Length: 218
Picture 1 (tube, rainbow, N blue to C red):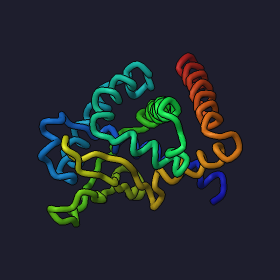
Picture 2 (picture 1 turned 90 degrees about the vertical axis):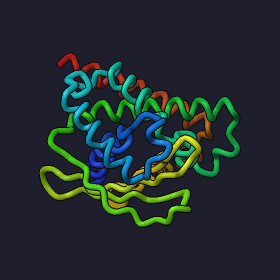
Picture 3 (picture 1 turned 60 degrees about the vertical axis):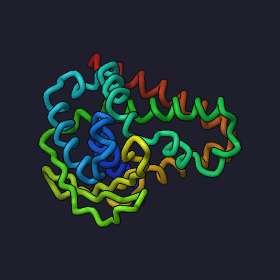
Picture 4 (picture 1 turned 120 degrees about the horizontal axis):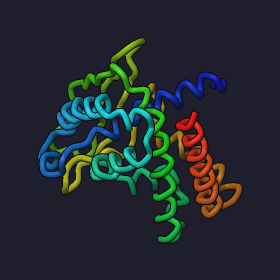
């Protein structure tokens, strides 16, 4: 994949991830709700929130962080997502390293959202009929993001937990988000170990924060 296409794919991934992971619901309602029904209902709610909140659209980090903490994290198995992105090295990481990895990975995704959310305009999500048995504890919810241009494939890997269905991975145009990060993280760990990955994520987050402040001032 050439750099231009890769950048385009990353933008699609991040913008669509914002729509997907921000699709959240109160835990009481989500606990007994089918995964495709949950995604369909809350996507409409979240899109309306984004469109009406100018601060979120402008990338206000305090607003984005509050939105993610209150609505996203209760509906995502973030430990599983981080562990899958780190790969086999997760088992060798200390509890402190696992905590730091989750913290820095979360900041990385949140700062990604702040830029991607500003791109949400007239999109809507079309959820396809779910092909799964009632006894299934893991499913893939398939959908398309519709708006200007061609539809964008958007699939969710979800698992059933005691508190409802949780998102733990996302596929855009045939590319799974966790696999994309796993490749990047494996290279960093191979070169500098788990602590090296944590340091690299922290530095990347620091740089992204500086870039976003500059953009907001301009």
